[in-house]
Structure formats: C-alpha cells, structure tokens
Image (cartoon, rainbow, N blue to C red; front, side):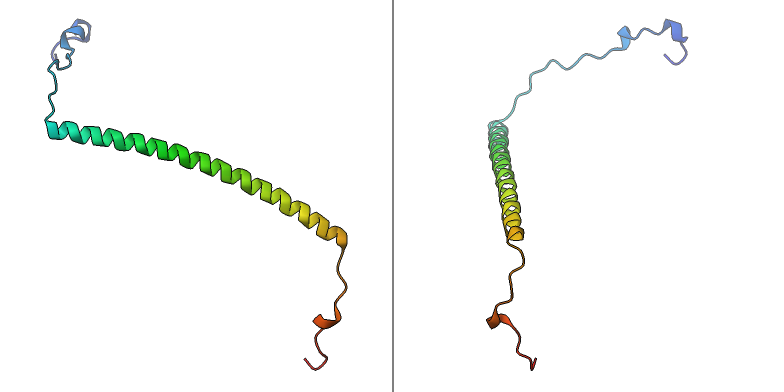
Length: 93
C-alpha cells in the first residue's frame, strides 16, 4: 500500500467488516443491564415531573409578581400617609 501509486489503491479491498458473532451476557450482566435500563427510565420520568413542576412554579411566580405590581399601584394611589401621633419620636431622642 505504501509503495503503490495512489491511482491503483483499491479502498474496497481494504474495508473491514463488522464482527458477526453474537454477544452472550452472563445472567449477572443481564440483570445489571436491566437494572440500569430501569433506573434510566425512572430518571427520565422524574426529570419530566420536575420539568412540569418547574413550569408550574414559574407560572405561580409570574402571577405573584403581577399581584405585587397591582398592590404597589394601589399603595401609590393612596399617597404618603400622615404620621400618626403614636409613632413620633419624643423630642429628647
């Protein structure tokens, strides 16, 4: 191959074929694979539930922010309250 000119190189002749033997797992290995697949499925389900909960919480936060803005608007409409006599500092402080 190294001494051959580039034009005479045949890529088809140098291709490798995948191994065609069956892979045989032991019972312990098969059990481990099943446990791992089960764990992966449970994690996917948990991630989905967490995603739904996060979305719901984001909606709640947005609703609460709108409510706070509404309350701030109502408070600003009321204006500054006049000081109450009981909340004034005595002159000796």
